[in-house]
Length: 481
Image (cartoon, rainbow, N blue to C red; front, side, top):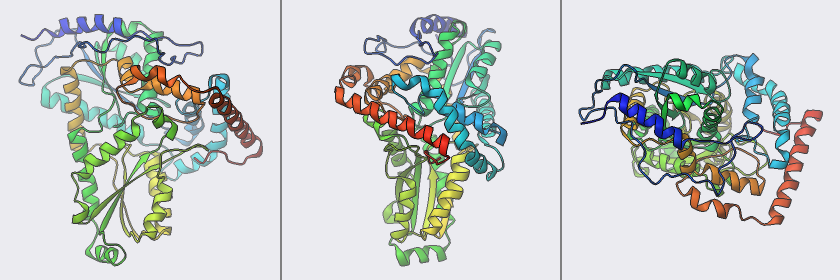
């Protein structure tokens, strides 16, 4: 016989209070996991097993409330918000990563970049209607997931949206969760692939808030779904959207393509890029992207059936090496190869926002057409796709039935501490990606860097900061976004 809702919630509250202890430094940023950190992740974690074997909710105690927190990037809803949004973005150490001796300049650099970049970003947002639709879609996703869980599982849950860089911030969502007396919380970053600069950064905020306000952990237990790039429903919904665009090519367009290229239709997955150094430090974002693309590709026609798949990375920032190939390099090359029929797929995003509506739809489309790619298609983001929403609901309920994974456990399992240590030693600038499982074993090795690497890394960072300051004084752009 399964334990009651109340007994499970109480046991989880006790266990997670013991597991989730965090330390933050003087500037309120969570300290990186150190080699001496001991976190027991070998034993079985408590389970949110609140469903019976038939899949229907058990009779609940009145004091058990289940919540679902969806985490996302956020975005300015009007042009007046753009500069503040950019400041929050670049004040995040996971976006602009400075070595410790330059860390005090973080906010100053963020202020400079946001002021310099605001006019160009405002123009970009004006080109898509004056603001980002990411909150609109996130709220719709939350409402539909809530409805689906109720209709399929007869389970009442409250859903919340917490944004990283603009309203409603994650901190606000946590306050509402506390006010609503939620005591079992499922945390879902709306990023299929785990990245330090996305999911990881959002989880750091939760770490800070849990450390700053212990009452959160005393009032509710939680579990994290750190990534879900291989979910069958997610893969199928992506494949369906792509297939719809593939089917839209006319016979005339297919005939035109076959005159210049032996493959009738081409699909380009454009993923958000991250610095190469993060991958080398243990960030598994690239691996998850590749596996995700392979999973979707398996549901599409093969190359022998007339569809060829390509992968590239977009949105690089700054002077350092990011994941290649770059989308703005791949498009001209495809044009040279005679590609005419192309479907571009934003693989890192589950809703429309500036990087789909402006960067892909306007900038990349213009580049593609200049390169001779005459028949352009863009697969829409998932938004409120029914299969996607249903799979999200199933995933959340499955998390309630499985052993819980705390915020700290999710960070350790995805190499967040390992990447921190390795990049601190190298002195790298940029944003981060996703991780594997072997973080604790590799922490010591990541700390073994030569003195000359640190020395030259610091010289490089002084040069970078100098360049940013020169940009502020001269008006010449340093970053490309």
